[in-house]
Structures are given as C-alpha cells and as structure tokens.
Image: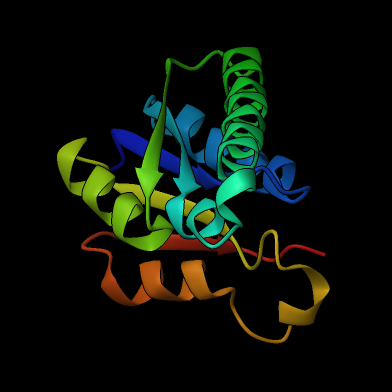
Length: 143
C-alpha cells in the first residue's frame, strides 16, 4: 500500500515518536523512509540583518541533526532511507516534496517547535499539510 513514507521534521523533541510510527509503517510495507527538514526562510528573514546568517546557520545545523536521527532510526529498522534538507515555507515545501518524490504517506507530529501551547490544536504546519496534501497524513500525538 505504501512504497514511500515521509517523516517531516522540524527537529523538535517529538520527532522520535513520529519516526517510530513512520518506521513501523515503512517496515510493514517494505517502503522507503524519507526524511525532510525545511529551513524556514521566514525565521531567518525576520531576524535583524546582522543576525540573519547566524539564524540560518543554526537552522541548517538543527536540520542536519534531525535528518541524522532519521537516518539512524530508519537504518536501525532495516529501511532504505532518503533525506533532504530544503529551504522554504514548511507546509508548501513538504507538499512539493510529496509530489516530487511520489510519497504515499506523510507522518508528522501534532506540534513542533511551538510547543505545548499548541497541544489542543494541530500545529500550523501540520494543519496546513493535512488540509492540502494529496496523500494521507498520519498525525502522531506529541506529549
């Protein structure tokens, strides 16, 4: 049913829970696990001019760590893993990647970097992906 499963991550602590679900589904379906981190250009463009390069570098480094975690988790589950770091607006970039990489299922957490204040509602990125993705989206409740 699923040949390609995407874990979209922002590097937040809930990624491990999300990855566990995605890896189990990918393993059960002998699917490729994809990991995507989007460097949110709005975050570094909103910073003071003098700080933009530092903010961007910090986001890039956070993305590298998040994608490394997906590679390790996926490989420990015996999966083929593909990762990519993109720059853009997260929900739009995720949907573009879904279409480009022929993804069958997206797995995301209920909320990410914005934290517990979003537990009652889906995080804005997750909500927009759910509303606009051309494939099923599994939303994992993050404590």
